[in-house]
Length: 467
Image 1 (cartoon, rainbow, N blue to C red):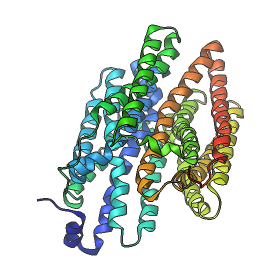
Image 2: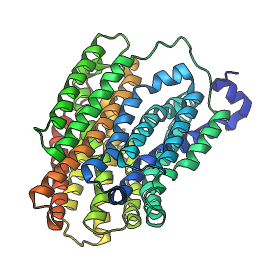
Image 3: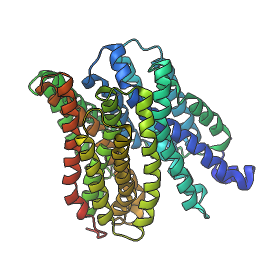
Image 4: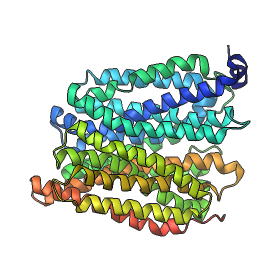
């Protein structure tokens, strides 16, 4: 029997919104744990499968790219299949992939499973915000969003820390079974707490456009990855690169001609939205690129164990949570452009600081600079939402929120790929020894700082004006 939110609210009474909020937090935290804990496992996976960084980075970029594409299917899946079925099927597929990963015999098997998990995460995660807006329509929405946001920020804080400890004691396989209890709990809870109503008249999704997008993302990421290994002139680089460019062009043309495009390109007619998108790309690079780069640096150059690397990242999550609350409060009082500039400068300072520390630097110093970066990201996140959405009409708000999230995830996928490419290039250019590796990490941190400084120009142009 179909049950909508109103029927469930009547069945469970006044406590239902809080029960649903708790369930949504558990599901989202499971996805984020899976996304972030893999980074501290990369050195162990690289050693076990005898692979280098160009291949290992696919464990992060493949997940992010699939998640980016999956975001565009979330609204259709919820409407056509219903929230309950969407969440349960997504979580069960995610769980199955985690179990299969424990029996993987090659790196490519792990990568393929991570890609499927990323697609599941992309479809599931946006549903939480939609349901929170619907169930708290009568009041308390701000508090609910704050509680949900705090829970979501706890996951990337605890993920590397708990994951690192488990890796030290049980091996890299631990990061795949770490989120399983939460996945199963959320799937089971969805049977009672999630609405099952759906609209069978929902128009079908544009699968051709989705295919173009998927080919574009993975072909371009593959071209960059192959360039790291064989050079730009290698057929394994320029052939997927050309295919990616053609698929991108086909996706844009089809989206412009469609009445119901997967990605509403008309949003970019607003100058402020275009500039906010530029900042979102860089923000994604900083958010996911640093989460990938810092654990790798700590374990490769500084000689940290996975557990100690995760422990260093623990305070950074606390700082990010506090900074996001401060950034949200300031976004009501200061212009988005000013906060974006401040956040970019703070994060750039963090990257420069990490690039300037000498080998053997103290745990406290490294933790300090990592925390400074999270302070900058905390200022950026609320300001980006305000700056990008203020210029849109009421009818465009939902589309704009999804589009800016898509751009940020896109920046994350290509950002991890970019920092890996630059890191490998500088490592080989420096001679390929341990000293060259330390210098390569230093220069990569400087590159990230430079990109954040370049983003100051579009950030200052984010004004609350339409057109």
